[in-house]
Amino acid sequence: MNRVTATIMSSTFLSVANAMSWAGFFILLAVVCLLILVWMYIYLPETKGRPLEEMSQYFAEITGDRSIMEAEALLYRQDEPSVESSRPHPVIDARPKSVSKKKPVMEKPPPGEVSR
Image (tube, one colour):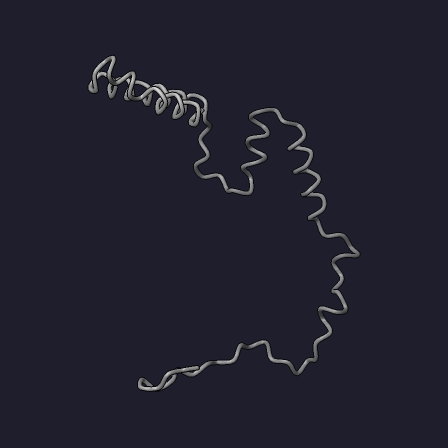
């Protein structure tokens, strides 16, 4: 809708402005903006306070799109840990016990020295 309106307004800008004066054209532009604002207020849902992860499910419920709801349900089922996948992977947990998990502390160089 935005691109269609912008294309119409920009392609007819000079001819409409010359036909109805510059002031009239900007009043027309203000009316178009108000109409778009009213349309957005009526048709766009409020998403304040909703996490981003729930947006696709929320819009699918509003529009009645079953394919998105089924895909989300399938993803949630795949994310649930099964008994077999909850066991630790032998390659990942195969590090020696003596390895420290702490990160090494880097010292800052003296003020006149450049670090490399």
